[in-house]
Each structure stands twice: as C-alpha cells, then as structure tokens.
Image 1 (spheres, rainbow, N blue to C red):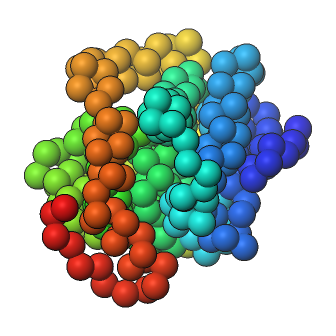
Image 2 (tube, rainbow, N blue to C red):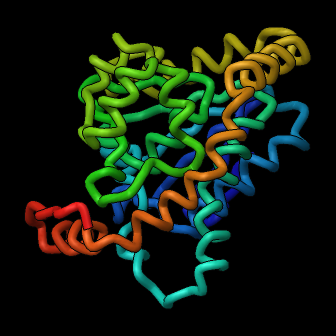
Length: 263
C-alpha cells in the first residue's frame, strides 16, 4: 500500500510501514500543517494491527531544518487562542509516543528543533555519518517546547541535555551515538537498509509482548512529565513577548548575529 498525506508519503510493505517527509524544496521545514498531518498519520497506526514496526524518514540531504520560520508572525491571535495553538507540538509528540508499534527514526544531514523533537519521540534513532542534531530554540530566545525536554533528559542525562538544549548547537551524530541519543551510526547510503533491518527484527517478535513492553517503559520513564511540562507552552508565551525574541527573529532573517539584552 502506498498513500500520500500532504507533505508525507506512507508506504506499507508486509508488517512494516514507512512514513517519508518530502518537502525537499524547503529542506523539509515543518509547517503547522505538516505537524497536523504527521499527528493524524501517527494516530492512524492505532487501527492498523497488521503493522508491527514504523519507520520515519525524510527525502533529500537533510532530515529537517525544523520549524518553517516563514510561517511565524502571521495574523495576530488572542492570547487564549495562541496558548492553545502552542500545544500543537505536544499533541504531536504524544501521538508519536503512543504509536503502539516500535518506531525508528532515520536521520541524515541536519535535524534541528522540531525535527530533533520528532526523532526523540521515536523508540530508536539511526543516524547517517556526518548528520548533526540539536535544539536551536534558545537562539530564538524561547524554551524547548512540545514536552520534548524530558525525552532529551531520558536519552542523554541532565548534564548532556543541558548542553544540547541550552547551547542550541548542532551536535555531530558520532558524539550523540556515544551519548546514547543515537542508537546506530551508519554510512549515509546504508541508512534506509539499516532501518529496515531493525524494523524486521522487531516485526518478527510477538507483537503483543513487544508493544506492552514499549508502553510500560514509556509510562515508567515519563511518569512525572505531565506534572511539569504542561507549563512549557506558558514559558513559550513569555519568551515570545520579549525584545530578545524579536531581535532573534530579525537577526535570523537578516543572517546576522543577534544582540540580546535580557529584555
């Protein structure tokens, strides 16, 4: 089975589904529409009992450069509506985490911000040699949203999570492999084969046991997340009302270094 859902293609071969982001002309930048599409796709696997593993990948040289900043700053919204809109990323992350089947993300080139969040929500990450991943939100004067912070801490521990999130730097996949963020590091030309091999290993196992184990581990490791991370959208609202946020966006668009004051 092959299907298209906006910026994504879905291919099913036997018990394995592959979801491909294909917005190469924009380096796979993610729009609000892209996020809704992927959320819908993720929720759809709930009714696909014959699928036993899911691969998430992207066409082109880069997995994704993150949020499409050309979509930032449209028509102003009332704060109450903006607060609800800010929860979209967290809904996507929940949808990805709640896919019953094992999920494998394949990363090449650059993955930053929203793209790295998506990778962290999957069960496993395969990266091509030379790939670089990071969370660049801090450079825009905002926090890491989407309830993604606990996942970074779970994967690499507090100190390395601080380095990833507080610096906003892109970290090479070789380093992230050593940290445990990346599960397998492979040659670029082997990334899809490696993902398929991993998917086949999990697809061959008893699905009820595999899926129960996955859900139990996720529930255990994230037991306290909801008690804290409900506030990340509020932190974002605060960040977007600062002068530093305006300066960061302007500097990004003008391709210069921002000058920040803490205001």
